[in-house]
Length: 233
Image (cartoon, rainbow, N blue to C red; front, side, top):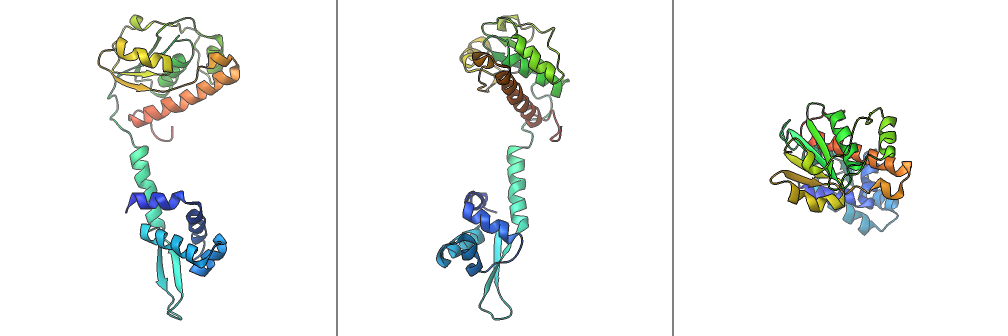
């Protein structure tokens, strides 16, 4: 299977339209042109590209020997989707490849606190910390929106990076300001950056909910990619 050819087929709306119809019934080039409302030559071109990619096959009618019928090849599309899944959704590392994870933002008042809380929720076996480059106090809306999903941050306090009592194996900056400081403060960890908009700029509970839910998905995906979470959790 040429994954690039299949990707090209699935990225074209006309070919997807034909593929959806081919799941229901076999088509001739004439019928395909009627579905696309295009010329016969244009429909034939799309069918040829789809045949080259292997997502459809063709054969001549055993009745008249002239009419060409095109059929959907589900195993090719299923193989393509399985290939995507194994590439983009499969765990990247073995469990506990990075036993200590640190989330860093500017003030440790919202985003890094949320990320830490979600990491503890999804992977309680993992050692997780958070800190700020210029820590202040936890924003009350941070506590409010996390309480809405059953996570209590009442006893959490903002911390400075130098106050961390562990050396992290991986550091994830969750604000653009903190990204520029991570390399200066941490010697040799694996580093990632998630550009999360600061909810405190707007200061509304709506923006804090957006940050909370965005970080939930980012943390959940991270835990799955590193073998710390099952796909359906």
